[in-house]
Length: 384
Image 1 (cartoon, rainbow, N blue to C red):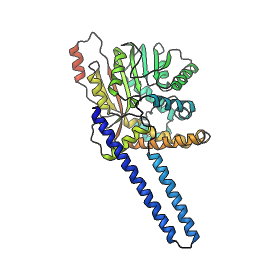
Image 2: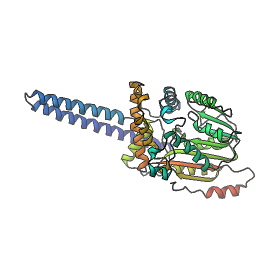
Image 3: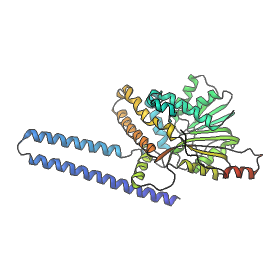
Image 4: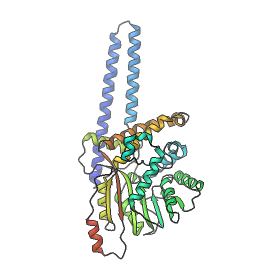
């Protein structure tokens, strides 16, 4: 598996190099054509000026395109880069201003989409997603809840309010996120939720510690998806529920060269090691031999509007970015471009929004009964 993945990475690197060389060659040919036209223009200064201006514009467009087409935040092999990136976004406050307390996609019903997704409050869509995910999970009255990859704690605080007698813990790689999440919980008068900095692949909790393990859009950053699921399974108590929401790529390995290039950009721009399919998450859960009632669904339809909605909220209210200065302008422009790329990848079926849940059987259940339940796993086809 590791050898295959390294070979795949090498192939993708060669593809990117060829693509960049081709773009540079095309740009060079375009500029050479303009230069030749200037030389042929004779003594007409107005024509020369017009052609030189055209050359400058073409060059600028090519440079901007090359910059935006070149990912700048590839996964470094450790979580350090991911944590620092979230530290920066949290301290700047731009992401929270537009996305609110939730750094994840929102939920848009078929009826809401028919009316027009822009008519829905963007931040409310995210809150609705948490409530829909909670209902879908089937969790009833968990006493201890773990939010794996909690961001600034939006989901954790909703869970703390929904289950006021429960103890909720959120973990994140970002110290800035943990501090901000704690401050928001204090502001809202919540005393049953806490936030700590912790590696999701090496959690410092005892086995069987939580009745509900919740993971909303954290799997994308995990370099070992199997270890991610196994660690969440380890800390899940018998009878408890595991609920995962995550960006996924299409199942299988039949990707065209163009599709692999698109995926590689999405990996490298937002520090993602790689994606897997939601069907593969289901298979990983099944192979733990510790989970049953496994369900894997595709929620692409109800989350897809989030991508473009997030760009539109910035168009409607650009002033926080305008006044933030050139450094933030550059970062935001990159995010806008990447968000649109994400929208198209999900729209085209290259990416899917996966929802995967399972239950850890009670110790009293027989191994045969648990095995029968696990063997019944089949992925669902979607949700409207």
